Length: 94
Image 1: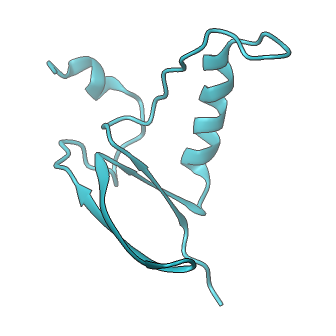
Image 2: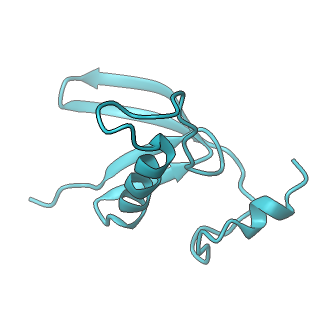
């Protein structure tokens, strides 16, 4: 039995996370440094499907047998050719 990849939805165009805290407990490492490496791991994992500009609008069914309705907003970047260089974010007026 083949398992579908895990879906990870992000409401915004980028998957960057701004941490609410400056340092993490117990090592006092920079939280952004820790989160950045984790996001890279998620981005290159073939078992995780990142869906940016998406929102859950409905869930139906029961435990282990459910369907989720997802609203995908319009994007101005072609995901197939995106290298995640962030140059488009610098050029965007919004």
